[in-house]
Amino acid sequence: MKLFIDTGNLKDIQALVPLGIIDGITTNPTLLSKEPGDYRDNLKKICQIVQGPTSAEVVETEAQAMIKQGRDLSKIDPWIVVKVPLTKDGIKACKALSSEGIKVNVTLCFSPAQALLAAKVGASYISPFVGRVDDISTPGMELVRDIVEIYGNYEFKTEILVASTRGPMHIVEAARMGADICTCPPAVIDALFNHPLTDVGLKKFLGDWDKAYGAAANR
Ligand code: G3P
Image 1 (cartoon, rainbow, N blue to C red):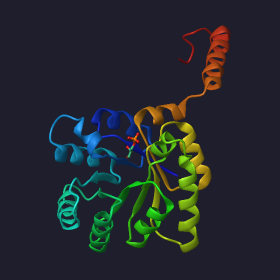
Image 2 (image 1 turned 45 degrees about the vertical axis):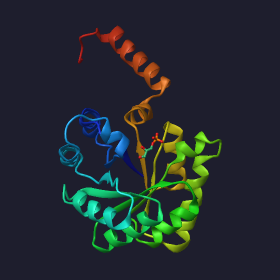
Image 3 (image 1 turned 30 degrees about the vertical axis):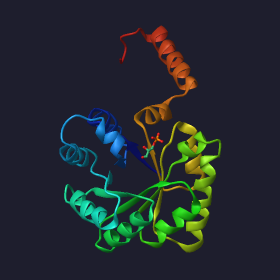
């Protein structure tokens, strides 16, 4: 399963990409609006660092305007994936942009029916927002399970990009279900590394080594 970072923050991206586990980036208007500087320059820099798919969302709401803005965003860098919302206009824009060879991530997906529509118009990615579904006391990961089943029935090429993840269990469950990608806030990527027994075990190994050979030996 691929791991994307859900951020527009260059420092976070520069810190996490060298770990070698990051396959791409997702942004949204809220995330990009928090960063200083020109958003197009920021997107270009992000693409250069990650060298992987980088979602940039349209802020137009009418199909023709979305298509125009999507074409414009796609010119920023070959790694740009145009993100459109799951509305009727967004679906029309997805079909048009995908037919031109521009990769499209259909976002704000909250139902399996919506995911089916995105696949039918050739979306490269569908983004179910699991955390926001959890927020309304409904299991968000059930949405992912349904989409995996539906896409598997028809061998759609659209990749399932699990978004709005809030903690490591969203990522573990997504991997168990066979989702293609999880996009995670930087704090969730950090949390994937953590286990208290790793810390305890490492402390004991190093302590035993130091007792036998002295703290300076081979360190
Ligand atoms: O990429 C979409 C995602 O950022 C939404 O996350 O935490 O705002 O629900 P959240």
